[in-house]
Length: 417
Image (cartoon, rainbow, N blue to C red; front, top):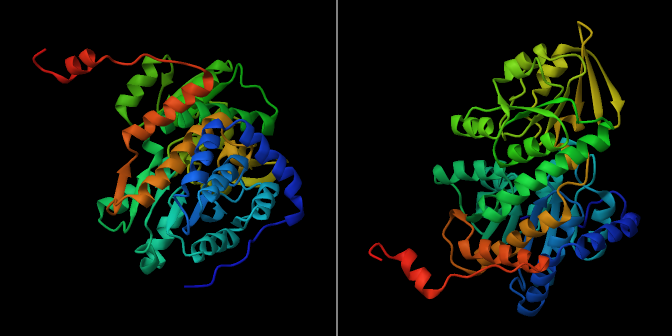
Protein backbone atom coordinates (compact mmCIF):
# COMPACT_ATOMS: atom_id res chain seq x y z
CA UNK A 1 0.00 0.00 0.00
CA UNK A 2 1.43 3.43 -0.96
CA UNK A 3 2.11 5.79 1.92
CA UNK A 4 -0.49 8.52 2.60
CA UNK A 5 0.48 11.84 1.06
CA UNK A 6 0.24 15.30 2.62
CA UNK A 7 -2.66 17.48 1.50
CA UNK A 8 -2.69 18.56 -2.14
CA UNK A 9 -4.41 21.94 -2.32
CA UNK A 10 -4.07 25.00 -4.51
CA UNK A 11 -3.50 27.78 -1.99
CA UNK A 12 -3.01 27.05 1.72
CA UNK A 13 -3.15 30.78 2.51
CA UNK A 14 -6.77 31.06 1.31
CA UNK A 15 -8.14 29.50 4.50
CA UNK A 16 -9.65 32.69 5.95
CA UNK A 17 -12.53 33.02 3.48
CA UNK A 18 -12.97 29.24 3.63
CA UNK A 19 -13.40 29.46 7.39
CA UNK A 20 -16.11 32.08 6.91
CA UNK A 21 -18.00 29.83 4.51
CA UNK A 22 -17.73 26.84 6.85
CA UNK A 23 -18.99 28.89 9.79
CA UNK A 24 -21.95 30.15 7.75
CA UNK A 25 -22.82 26.56 6.90
CA UNK A 26 -22.41 25.51 10.54
CA UNK A 27 -24.85 28.21 11.67
CA UNK A 28 -27.52 26.88 9.29
CA UNK A 29 -26.98 23.13 9.73
CA UNK A 30 -28.50 22.37 13.16
CA UNK A 31 -28.97 18.65 12.45
CA UNK A 32 -25.26 18.17 11.85
CA UNK A 33 -24.61 20.26 14.93
CA UNK A 34 -26.67 17.89 17.06
CA UNK A 35 -24.97 14.84 15.54
CA UNK A 36 -21.57 16.44 16.12
CA UNK A 37 -22.38 16.79 19.83
CA UNK A 38 -23.39 13.12 19.98
CA UNK A 39 -20.29 11.99 18.13
CA UNK A 40 -18.00 14.02 20.37
CA UNK A 41 -19.38 12.11 23.34
CA UNK A 42 -19.61 8.66 21.72
CA UNK A 43 -16.50 8.67 19.47
CA UNK A 44 -17.99 6.00 17.13
CA UNK A 45 -15.06 6.33 14.69
CA UNK A 46 -12.23 6.36 17.22
CA UNK A 47 -9.05 5.11 15.54
CA UNK A 48 -10.77 4.70 12.14
CA UNK A 49 -9.72 6.23 8.85
CA UNK A 50 -12.49 7.54 6.61
CA UNK A 51 -12.04 8.62 3.00
CA UNK A 52 -14.56 10.88 1.31
CA UNK A 53 -15.21 11.80 -2.32
CA UNK A 54 -17.75 14.63 -2.43
CA UNK A 55 -18.19 18.07 -3.93
CA UNK A 56 -15.71 19.96 -1.82
CA UNK A 57 -17.45 23.08 -0.56
CA UNK A 58 -18.54 24.42 2.82
CA UNK A 59 -21.42 22.03 3.51
CA UNK A 60 -19.23 19.03 2.75
CA UNK A 61 -16.54 20.50 4.99
CA UNK A 62 -19.02 20.50 7.86
CA UNK A 63 -19.70 16.79 7.32
CA UNK A 64 -15.96 16.02 7.31
CA UNK A 65 -15.53 17.92 10.58
CA UNK A 66 -18.45 16.06 12.18
CA UNK A 67 -16.81 12.73 11.32
CA UNK A 68 -13.55 14.07 12.70
CA UNK A 69 -15.37 15.00 15.92
CA UNK A 70 -16.46 11.36 16.12
CA UNK A 71 -12.83 10.29 16.39
CA UNK A 72 -12.06 9.63 12.74
CA UNK A 73 -9.00 10.56 10.77
CA UNK A 74 -10.51 12.01 7.62
CA UNK A 75 -9.24 12.41 4.07
CA UNK A 76 -11.24 13.94 1.24
CA UNK A 77 -11.06 14.32 -2.52
CA UNK A 78 -13.39 16.37 -4.69
CA UNK A 79 -15.96 14.53 -6.78
CA UNK A 80 -15.91 17.07 -9.63
CA UNK A 81 -13.01 19.19 -10.91
CA UNK A 82 -15.13 22.34 -11.12
CA UNK A 83 -17.01 22.12 -7.82
CA UNK A 84 -14.01 22.29 -5.46
CA UNK A 85 -13.69 25.63 -3.66
CA UNK A 86 -10.00 26.22 -2.99
CA UNK A 87 -10.54 28.42 0.05
CA UNK A 88 -12.70 25.77 1.71
CA UNK A 89 -10.10 23.12 0.88
CA UNK A 90 -7.44 25.26 2.56
CA UNK A 91 -9.58 25.82 5.66
CA UNK A 92 -10.34 22.11 5.95
CA UNK A 93 -6.69 21.15 5.61
CA UNK A 94 -5.79 23.66 8.31
CA UNK A 95 -8.27 21.88 10.62
CA UNK A 96 -6.48 18.56 10.28
CA UNK A 97 -8.34 16.91 7.41
CA UNK A 98 -6.19 15.51 4.58
CA UNK A 99 -7.43 17.25 1.43
CA UNK A 100 -6.66 16.17 -2.13
CA UNK A 101 -8.47 18.54 -4.47
CA UNK A 102 -8.30 21.83 -6.29
CA UNK A 103 -10.56 23.72 -8.62
CA UNK A 104 -10.01 23.09 -12.31
CA UNK A 105 -8.07 19.85 -11.90
CA UNK A 106 -7.11 18.16 -15.16
CA UNK A 107 -8.37 14.60 -15.67
CA UNK A 108 -4.91 13.34 -14.68
CA UNK A 109 -4.84 15.50 -11.54
CA UNK A 110 -8.38 14.51 -10.62
CA UNK A 111 -7.46 10.84 -10.91
CA UNK A 112 -4.31 11.43 -8.83
CA UNK A 113 -6.42 12.99 -6.08
CA UNK A 114 -8.75 9.98 -6.00
CA UNK A 115 -5.79 7.65 -5.73
CA UNK A 116 -4.31 9.76 -2.93
CA UNK A 117 -7.48 9.55 -0.87
CA UNK A 118 -7.40 5.76 -1.24
CA UNK A 119 -3.70 5.63 -0.36
CA UNK A 120 -4.94 6.85 3.03
CA UNK A 121 -5.96 3.17 3.48
CA UNK A 122 -9.47 3.87 4.79
CA UNK A 123 -11.83 1.55 6.62
CA UNK A 124 -14.90 3.62 5.79
CA UNK A 125 -16.01 5.53 2.69
CA UNK A 126 -18.40 8.26 1.69
CA UNK A 127 -18.61 8.12 -2.09
CA UNK A 128 -20.33 10.31 -4.70
CA UNK A 129 -20.84 8.70 -8.06
CA UNK A 130 -19.02 5.53 -6.97
CA UNK A 131 -15.66 6.75 -8.25
CA UNK A 132 -13.84 5.35 -5.22
CA UNK A 133 -15.74 2.08 -5.49
CA UNK A 134 -14.87 1.74 -9.16
CA UNK A 135 -11.13 2.27 -8.60
CA UNK A 136 -11.11 -0.11 -5.62
CA UNK A 137 -12.84 -2.93 -7.49
CA UNK A 138 -11.01 -2.50 -10.79
CA UNK A 139 -7.51 -1.83 -9.54
CA UNK A 140 -7.30 -2.42 -5.77
CA UNK A 141 -9.36 -5.54 -4.97
CA UNK A 142 -7.22 -6.46 -1.97
CA UNK A 143 -7.82 -3.02 -0.49
CA UNK A 144 -11.53 -3.21 -1.30
CA UNK A 145 -11.80 -6.37 0.78
CA UNK A 146 -10.63 -4.43 3.86
CA UNK A 147 -13.33 -1.73 3.70
CA UNK A 148 -15.79 -2.05 6.59
CA UNK A 149 -18.51 -0.11 4.80
CA UNK A 150 -19.61 3.18 3.35
CA UNK A 151 -22.38 5.40 2.04
CA UNK A 152 -23.21 6.53 -1.50
CA UNK A 153 -24.52 10.03 -2.13
CA UNK A 154 -26.05 10.20 -5.58
CA UNK A 155 -28.25 8.47 -8.16
CA UNK A 156 -25.40 7.79 -10.57
CA UNK A 157 -23.39 6.07 -7.86
CA UNK A 158 -26.36 3.95 -6.83
CA UNK A 159 -26.77 2.79 -10.42
CA UNK A 160 -23.12 1.73 -10.57
CA UNK A 161 -23.21 0.02 -7.15
CA UNK A 162 -26.46 -1.74 -7.99
CA UNK A 163 -24.83 -3.15 -11.12
CA UNK A 164 -21.85 -4.32 -9.05
CA UNK A 165 -24.12 -5.92 -6.46
CA UNK A 166 -26.19 -7.59 -9.17
CA UNK A 167 -23.03 -9.14 -10.61
CA UNK A 168 -21.93 -10.24 -7.13
CA UNK A 169 -18.66 -8.29 -7.17
CA UNK A 170 -19.30 -5.61 -4.52
CA UNK A 171 -16.84 -6.50 -1.77
CA UNK A 172 -18.14 -4.39 1.12
CA UNK A 173 -21.48 -3.06 2.40
CA UNK A 174 -22.71 0.31 1.10
CA UNK A 175 -25.76 2.20 2.31
CA UNK A 176 -27.80 3.82 -0.46
CA UNK A 177 -28.19 7.26 1.09
CA UNK A 178 -29.58 8.64 -2.18
CA UNK A 179 -32.58 6.30 -1.92
CA UNK A 180 -33.52 7.42 1.59
CA UNK A 181 -36.77 9.37 1.72
CA UNK A 182 -35.13 12.29 3.51
CA UNK A 183 -32.62 12.46 0.66
CA UNK A 184 -34.41 12.04 -2.65
CA UNK A 185 -37.71 13.62 -1.63
CA UNK A 186 -36.03 16.82 -0.45
CA UNK A 187 -32.40 17.07 -1.58
CA UNK A 188 -33.05 15.80 -5.10
CA UNK A 189 -36.30 17.68 -5.59
CA UNK A 190 -36.04 20.95 -3.65
CA UNK A 191 -32.26 21.14 -3.54
CA UNK A 192 -31.66 20.44 -7.23
CA UNK A 193 -34.71 22.45 -8.21
CA UNK A 194 -33.40 25.60 -6.54
CA UNK A 195 -29.67 25.20 -7.10
CA UNK A 196 -29.88 24.48 -10.84
CA UNK A 197 -31.64 27.77 -11.49
CA UNK A 198 -29.40 29.61 -9.06
CA UNK A 199 -26.33 28.42 -10.97
CA UNK A 200 -27.95 29.07 -14.35
CA UNK A 201 -29.05 32.61 -13.54
CA UNK A 202 -25.86 33.78 -11.85
CA UNK A 203 -23.83 32.40 -14.79
CA UNK A 204 -25.95 33.69 -17.70
CA UNK A 205 -27.64 36.76 -16.14
CA UNK A 206 -30.73 35.79 -18.19
CA UNK A 207 -34.41 35.54 -17.35
CA UNK A 208 -36.24 32.24 -17.11
CA UNK A 209 -39.68 33.80 -17.38
CA UNK A 210 -41.18 33.61 -20.87
CA UNK A 211 -38.74 30.99 -22.10
CA UNK A 212 -39.39 27.35 -22.97
CA UNK A 213 -37.40 25.07 -20.68
CA UNK A 214 -36.87 21.46 -21.70
CA UNK A 215 -36.21 19.13 -18.75
CA UNK A 216 -34.74 15.83 -19.92
CA UNK A 217 -35.61 13.26 -17.26
CA UNK A 218 -38.46 13.40 -14.74
CA UNK A 219 -37.01 11.61 -11.76
CA UNK A 220 -36.89 13.39 -8.43
CA UNK A 221 -34.26 15.84 -9.62
CA UNK A 222 -36.13 16.49 -12.85
CA UNK A 223 -39.35 17.06 -10.92
CA UNK A 224 -37.62 19.76 -8.90
CA UNK A 225 -36.06 21.44 -11.93
CA UNK A 226 -39.40 21.47 -13.77
CA UNK A 227 -41.32 22.72 -10.73
CA UNK A 228 -38.96 25.62 -10.12
CA UNK A 229 -38.80 26.53 -13.82
CA UNK A 230 -42.57 26.84 -13.87
CA UNK A 231 -42.43 28.93 -10.72
CA UNK A 232 -39.99 31.27 -12.47
CA UNK A 233 -42.46 31.78 -15.31
CA UNK A 234 -41.16 29.34 -17.91
CA UNK A 235 -43.16 27.10 -20.20
CA UNK A 236 -41.90 23.61 -19.37
CA UNK A 237 -41.49 20.59 -21.63
CA UNK A 238 -40.51 17.20 -20.20
CA UNK A 239 -38.73 14.42 -22.12
CA UNK A 240 -38.93 10.91 -20.66
CA UNK A 241 -38.43 7.24 -21.53
CA UNK A 242 -40.45 5.94 -18.57
CA UNK A 243 -44.19 5.91 -19.38
CA UNK A 244 -45.22 6.16 -15.73
CA UNK A 245 -43.11 9.27 -15.16
CA UNK A 246 -44.39 10.69 -18.44
CA UNK A 247 -47.99 10.24 -17.25
CA UNK A 248 -47.06 11.98 -13.99
CA UNK A 249 -45.51 14.92 -15.88
CA UNK A 250 -48.63 15.32 -18.04
CA UNK A 251 -50.87 15.22 -14.96
CA UNK A 252 -48.67 17.90 -13.36
CA UNK A 253 -49.49 20.14 -16.32
CA UNK A 254 -46.27 19.86 -18.30
CA UNK A 255 -46.02 19.16 -22.02
CA UNK A 256 -44.34 15.83 -22.75
CA UNK A 257 -42.69 15.00 -26.06
CA UNK A 258 -39.62 13.26 -27.55
CA UNK A 259 -36.34 15.14 -27.45
CA UNK A 260 -36.33 15.46 -31.27
CA UNK A 261 -39.56 17.45 -31.08
CA UNK A 262 -38.59 19.37 -27.95
CA UNK A 263 -35.31 20.39 -29.56
CA UNK A 264 -37.19 22.60 -32.00
CA UNK A 265 -39.05 24.62 -29.36
CA UNK A 266 -36.68 24.78 -26.39
CA UNK A 267 -34.72 27.84 -25.30
CA UNK A 268 -33.03 26.16 -22.31
CA UNK A 269 -32.25 22.45 -21.95
CA UNK A 270 -31.43 20.84 -18.62
CA UNK A 271 -30.47 17.13 -18.58
CA UNK A 272 -31.20 15.27 -15.34
CA UNK A 273 -31.03 11.54 -16.15
CA UNK A 274 -27.73 9.98 -15.08
CA UNK A 275 -27.42 8.60 -18.63
CA UNK A 276 -25.18 9.54 -21.54
CA UNK A 277 -25.95 11.53 -24.70
CA UNK A 278 -29.55 12.26 -23.75
CA UNK A 279 -29.06 15.62 -25.48
CA UNK A 280 -27.79 14.09 -28.70
CA UNK A 281 -26.36 15.26 -31.99
CA UNK A 282 -29.73 14.76 -33.64
CA UNK A 283 -31.36 17.04 -31.08
CA UNK A 284 -28.66 19.71 -31.38
CA UNK A 285 -29.03 19.77 -35.16
CA UNK A 286 -32.67 20.78 -34.62
CA UNK A 287 -32.19 23.46 -31.97
CA UNK A 288 -32.89 27.13 -32.53
CA UNK A 289 -30.18 29.77 -32.56
CA UNK A 290 -29.16 30.73 -29.03
CA UNK A 291 -30.31 27.57 -27.26
CA UNK A 292 -28.56 27.01 -23.92
CA UNK A 293 -27.53 23.52 -22.76
CA UNK A 294 -26.96 22.56 -19.14
CA UNK A 295 -26.52 19.38 -17.15
CA UNK A 296 -27.57 18.54 -13.61
CA UNK A 297 -26.45 14.89 -13.68
CA UNK A 298 -23.34 13.72 -11.85
CA UNK A 299 -21.07 13.12 -14.85
CA UNK A 300 -20.50 15.39 -17.87
CA UNK A 301 -21.89 12.83 -20.31
CA UNK A 302 -25.55 13.82 -20.63
CA UNK A 303 -24.86 16.47 -23.28
CA UNK A 304 -23.01 14.80 -26.16
CA UNK A 305 -20.03 17.15 -26.05
CA UNK A 306 -18.10 15.29 -28.74
CA UNK A 307 -21.00 15.69 -31.17
CA UNK A 308 -21.38 19.35 -30.24
CA UNK A 309 -17.69 19.98 -30.90
CA UNK A 310 -17.93 18.13 -34.21
CA UNK A 311 -20.89 20.25 -35.30
CA UNK A 312 -19.11 23.49 -34.45
CA UNK A 313 -16.92 25.49 -36.81
CA UNK A 314 -15.87 27.82 -34.00
CA UNK A 315 -15.84 27.63 -30.20
CA UNK A 316 -15.27 30.60 -27.94
CA UNK A 317 -15.89 31.65 -24.35
CA UNK A 318 -18.97 33.87 -24.35
CA UNK A 319 -18.94 34.47 -20.58
CA UNK A 320 -17.10 32.82 -17.72
CA UNK A 321 -18.42 29.25 -17.58
CA UNK A 322 -20.36 29.65 -20.86
CA UNK A 323 -18.93 28.33 -24.14
CA UNK A 324 -20.42 29.34 -27.47
CA UNK A 325 -20.44 26.76 -30.26
CA UNK A 326 -21.07 28.35 -33.67
CA UNK A 327 -22.39 25.90 -36.24
CA UNK A 328 -21.82 25.96 -40.00
CA UNK A 329 -25.25 27.50 -40.66
CA UNK A 330 -24.56 30.36 -38.22
CA UNK A 331 -26.61 29.07 -35.31
CA UNK A 332 -25.06 29.39 -31.88
CA UNK A 333 -25.49 26.85 -29.08
CA UNK A 334 -24.26 27.63 -25.58
CA UNK A 335 -22.91 25.07 -23.11
CA UNK A 336 -22.73 25.90 -19.41
CA UNK A 337 -19.83 24.78 -17.20
CA UNK A 338 -18.36 22.37 -19.77
CA UNK A 339 -21.47 20.21 -19.40
CA UNK A 340 -20.71 19.52 -15.73
CA UNK A 341 -23.23 19.95 -12.92
CA UNK A 342 -24.59 23.43 -13.43
CA UNK A 343 -25.59 23.82 -9.79
CA UNK A 344 -22.09 23.09 -8.45
CA UNK A 345 -19.78 23.99 -11.31
CA UNK A 346 -21.59 27.30 -11.81
CA UNK A 347 -22.95 27.86 -8.29
CA UNK A 348 -22.65 26.88 -4.63
CA UNK A 349 -24.68 23.69 -4.90
CA UNK A 350 -27.78 22.82 -2.94
CA UNK A 351 -29.09 25.13 -0.21
CA UNK A 352 -27.45 24.67 3.16
CA UNK A 353 -30.60 23.53 4.98
CA UNK A 354 -31.41 20.71 2.58
CA UNK A 355 -27.85 19.39 2.70
CA UNK A 356 -28.14 19.41 6.48
CA UNK A 357 -30.67 16.59 6.12
CA UNK A 358 -28.65 14.67 3.54
CA UNK A 359 -25.40 14.91 5.45
CA UNK A 360 -27.17 13.96 8.68
CA UNK A 361 -28.10 10.74 6.88
CA UNK A 362 -24.50 10.34 5.69
CA UNK A 363 -23.09 10.72 9.20
CA UNK A 364 -25.64 8.44 10.87
CA UNK A 365 -25.46 5.95 8.00
CA UNK A 366 -21.68 5.69 8.18
CA UNK A 367 -21.85 5.07 11.91
CA UNK A 368 -24.47 2.38 11.26
CA UNK A 369 -22.54 0.50 8.60
CA UNK A 370 -19.16 0.75 10.37
CA UNK A 371 -20.36 -0.38 13.78
CA UNK A 372 -22.81 -3.14 12.84
CA UNK A 373 -22.26 -6.40 10.93
CA UNK A 374 -23.63 -5.66 7.46
CA UNK A 375 -22.78 -8.18 4.73
CA UNK A 376 -21.24 -7.01 1.44
CA UNK A 377 -23.77 -5.49 -0.94
CA UNK A 378 -25.99 -2.44 -1.39
CA UNK A 379 -28.33 -1.78 1.54
CA UNK A 380 -31.18 0.62 2.20
CA UNK A 381 -30.93 3.25 4.91
CA UNK A 382 -32.86 1.87 7.91
CA UNK A 383 -36.37 3.34 8.11
CA UNK A 384 -35.86 4.48 11.70
CA UNK A 385 -32.93 6.64 10.55
CA UNK A 386 -35.07 8.36 7.91
CA UNK A 387 -37.67 9.04 10.59
CA UNK A 388 -35.06 10.31 13.04
CA UNK A 389 -33.72 12.84 10.55
CA UNK A 390 -37.25 13.98 9.67
CA UNK A 391 -38.10 14.47 13.34
CA UNK A 392 -34.88 16.41 13.88
CA UNK A 393 -35.80 18.67 10.96
CA UNK A 394 -39.29 19.30 12.34
CA UNK A 395 -37.85 20.05 15.76
CA UNK A 396 -35.56 22.76 14.35
CA UNK A 397 -38.66 24.39 12.84
CA UNK A 398 -40.60 24.15 16.09
CA UNK A 399 -43.16 21.88 14.42
CA UNK A 400 -44.99 19.18 16.39
CA UNK A 401 -46.98 16.29 14.91
CA UNK A 402 -49.46 13.75 16.24
CA UNK A 403 -48.68 10.19 17.33
CA UNK A 404 -50.80 7.08 16.92
CA UNK A 405 -52.51 5.75 19.99
CA UNK A 406 -51.93 2.12 20.95
CA UNK A 407 -55.48 1.32 19.78
CA UNK A 408 -54.76 2.93 16.41
CA UNK A 409 -51.52 0.96 16.01
CA UNK A 410 -53.33 -2.29 16.78
CA UNK A 411 -56.09 -1.42 14.32
CA UNK A 412 -53.61 -0.79 11.51
CA UNK A 413 -51.74 -4.03 12.30
CA UNK A 414 -54.85 -6.20 12.35
CA UNK A 415 -56.77 -7.79 9.48
CA UNK A 416 -59.71 -8.66 11.71
CA UNK A 417 -60.30 -5.40 13.57
